[in-house]
Amino acid sequence: MRNVLFYIAGAATVGAFFTLWCAVAVQRVRKESEASKYGELCARIQKQIDETRMRISSVKMQLHIADHALDQALLQWKYEYLMKQEQWLVELMCGKREEEKQEEKQ
Image 1 (tube, rainbow, N blue to C red):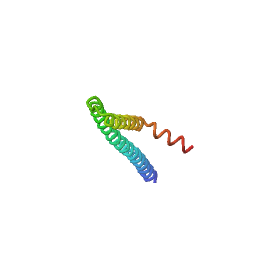
Image 2 (image 1 turned 60 degrees about the horizontal axis):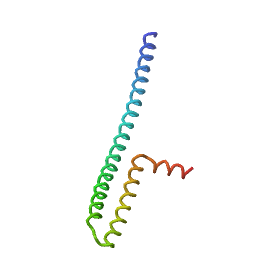
Image 3 (image 1 turned 180 degrees about the horizontal axis):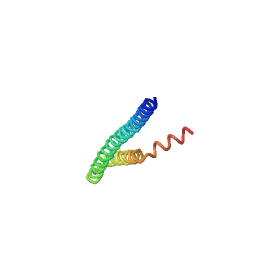
Image 4 (image 1 turned 180 degrees about the vertical axis):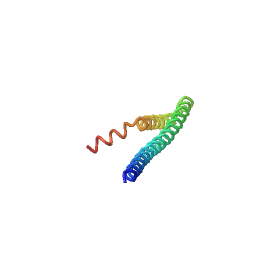
């Protein structure tokens, strides 16, 4: 009788450890998945920032080359727009936009 109780207690202990191990493994996989998604998002934002900076440098070069006042005005507007877009992307990358949204909700 005592042996049966020890076997049952042992089986219950092994079952409890297995359940805890499974729960920890699932949590670890979820965290890794979230980190992976966040990394992909950051990579896409960084790519967009790089493309915007390339366009900014192109517009700067065109500003120096253009000689007409209308061309200058349009290129200046485009330059300012791209600078604001770059700033927004950098803030998005740093999480400032998310913080502002959370503050607005509160």
